[in-house]
Each structure stands twice: as C-alpha cells, then as structure tokens.
Image (cartoon, rainbow, N blue to C red; front, side, top):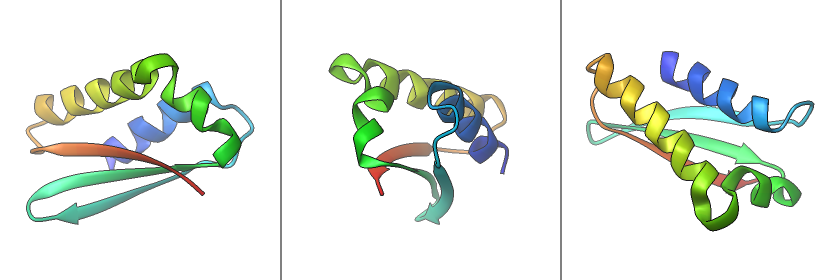
Length: 79
C-alpha cells in the first residue's frame, strides 16, 4: 500500500483539487499501479515528451526496489 500512497501523493501534488484514482493490481508476481485522471488533465500528468510520467515511474520503481517489493509498473489512463 505504500507504493499506492506514494504514487497518489505525487499525482495529487501535480493536480491539486482534481479527482484522481490510484489502484494497485497484482499480476504474475508484478505490481501494477493504475492511475486514473480526467481526460483533460492527461497532458499535465504525462508532460512534454512523457517526462513527468517517466519521473513518477522512476520514483515509484526506486521506492519498490529500496523496500524489496519486486517489480512495479505505473500505468496512467484517463477516466
């Protein structure tokens, strides 16, 4: 649950006062964190060239590695 809280914190700091949903899905030994944001804010959360989305993924993956939780993927989708 720590990775979900970290991901939710990062996204909500970028999109304050916006309804954001973060779910954890475990599949085949991997952890998948699904981030759902309104369609009109997809550009903000992905960033130019995907820089913001890649930064979020890097931070969450580093936290997972540090806590020895295994492999983690972050998927960002629209609601």
